[in-house]
Image 1 (cartoon, one colour):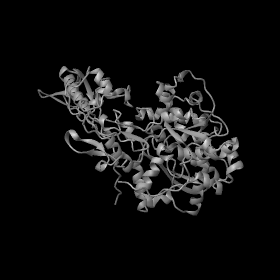
Image 2 (spheres, rainbow, N blue to C red):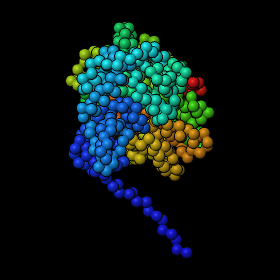
Image 3 (cartoon, rainbow, N blue to C red):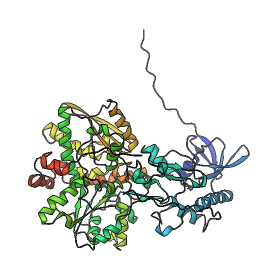
Length: 584
C-alpha cells in the first residue's frame, strides 16, 4: 500500500479588509485591534489598562473610539474591537473627547492628586492625559479614598489612594507571575486592590519581584524608598562602599533622558564617587565567582547523576517563590549565593581584613535593578553584610538630588581588587546570561581544555522559555532558560512529577531578566529591553576575558583567601541554605 504523504501546514494568507480611519481609506488585518491599527498609522489613543504583556480587559474605558457600520454609529473601546469590511472609525471627535474627559474625571474623582509626593510624578499617564484634556479638577467630587498606606513590605509600598483600578498589577501578579499576592477586594466604590482578607503585603505571598510596580501607571505601587538612608550614611563617619549590578550600566542612562541601551559604566562610577562613596566595586566580579562555584557544583552533580536538574539561584524573587510553593523540590536549587550576596560577603570579610577595618565600620550600599534585592539583604543568612539597596531608579534620583550633571561626567574605572570582571559576569544582567556564563566555564572544565566556543546564542532573546541540547565531553547536556515566574512554575511542576528532561535550568523572575527588574526605569517594553540586552552583549564582547574562571582578580581571591573552588571556606562564605516560607 503506498505511504500517505504527510500533509504540509501552510499558513493561510490573511485577507485584508477595507476600513476608513478618520476618513482615510486603508487596508488592514481583521485580526488586529483598532487601537493597534491607529498606532501603526501614527494616531495615539490614550489608554491605562492595556499592556503589551497582559490580556486586554477594556477596563479603563479611556481608549474609546466612534465606529460606524451600516448607518449605526456607536462608541466602543478600541483595545477590544477588531475591524470589519467598510467600518468607519473616528478617533478624536468632539463627542469622543468629551467621553474621554468624563471617564478620566471619574478616575480622578477617587484618586489622590497630591502629585508632588507621588513616585510617578512627571512620569505619570494620568497626569499627562489630564493636562492634554485640560482637566484642572474633576466635576465628580466622589468620596476620596482614605486607605492606610501599606509599607509593611521591605520592597514595595502599596497606596490604594492612588489606585485607578486598571487591574494591571493584578493581572501581572496572578496571570504572568502566578503568585496571587493581590487581587480586587470589596465592591462598588469601596473596591481596592489588596492581598486577600486585607492582609498587609509582608504577610501575603508576595515575592518582592516588583513586576506590579513596573506596570502600575499611577504610583499606587512603588519601590520602598531607601535614598534617605544613604544620605544619612554619608554623615555617619563610616567608610561608604557601593557595588553595582551588571544590568545597571545599560539602564541608568534612561533616568537622564539617554537612549535605552546606552552604556554608562564609567559615568556611573564617577557619579558614585562624587556622591561620597570611597570605593566602588563591580558586582560582576561576584557574578564571576558565582559561576566558578555554580559550575563546580553542576559538574559534580552531573557526573554523579544526582539532584538534577540543577537550578541557578541568582534571583531572590525566584528563590522566595520556590521556598513558598515548591519547597520539597529545592534540593534542585544550587546552594550558591547570588552575586550581590557573594560580593557583600567578600567586602565584609576579605576586603575588610585587607584594609584593617572592622565590618561594622563599613556601610555597603548595593545598586540593584531589583526590588527583591531589598528583601534579600534582610534574609537571616545575609543580615550583617549589605546595609542598603538602592534600585536603578533610586540611584538616578540620588544623583539628581546631589545636583550632579550626569551626562557631562568623565568615565572612571571600578576600584580594585573587587572591580575586575569578565564578559561572563556582564551578561548576568539579561535572560540566558547566567546559563551562558556557566556553560562557558563548565564546557572548558568538562572537556579538560579551553574551548573557542563561548557564545550560546540559542538561549538568547526574549522568548520566555528557551531550551537547547549540547554535547560536552561526549555526553548530552539538556538546558532550559525561563524568565517570568509563570514559566518557572511549569518547570517546577515538571520536576515535582518526575518528568523534567533537563540537566541545568536558569530561572529569572522578571521579563528579560534583570534588565526588566522591578527597580528599572519605566517603560520596560520589549523594544527597550532588546536595546538593553544588546548593550550588555556588546560590553561582553569588549572584555579582555570572557570566561569567569579566567578572571585574574577572582583567581587571586581564591589563592589568597577562599582556597579551592567549592572548598570548605568557599562554601562557608559563598553558599547558603533555604527554608520553607509560609504564605497566606
